[in-house]
Length: 212
Image (cartoon, rainbow, N blue to C red; front, side, top):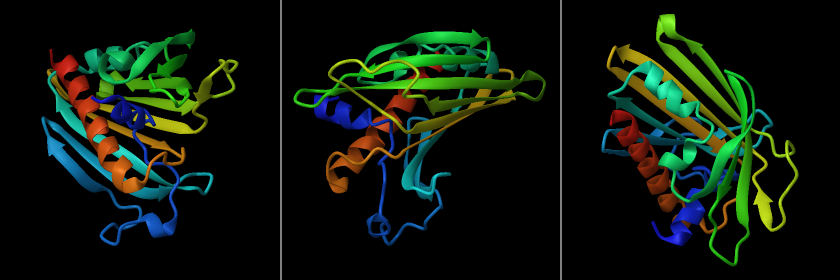
């Protein structure tokens, strides 16, 4: 992936704040629309309103993976695992682990000059019910948890959710959704297709890792 494409992709797979005029005429507000279905992953997008009342674009990916529920939870709850499947990550590690189900992570994204690099501080919480074959991981931005680093621009509004559902002993269904109110950096006709491709390809890579 080219540096500029990586830069756009690491806006955390969301197209950011929108205005009503930005919504294409063929899109129903609040309704998921499939944008790609390839390599075992289905990608969707919708325009929605955050709990703060901000209009924003949300992305979702769904896939069936040949692995156990425990294997999927183990990788996705590993605070340093993001760099294994997401492109454009320079650093990714656990800042603090509160207990087995709550932790803070730090992620630094590679941004080409002349832009500042961007980082994300997240609080993650795992809720698992193995008896019913389901696990959720909520990811919430906590931008003030650690001090800013010189020359780094911090993402201040990002939320994501993983839902892992056991289909049988060897297969799970994974749904990942993410939303950010970061404003678009480039015109949408340029930015959106690159984000859609990066979002999809990252999940394809994750699927390959889990399936192996």
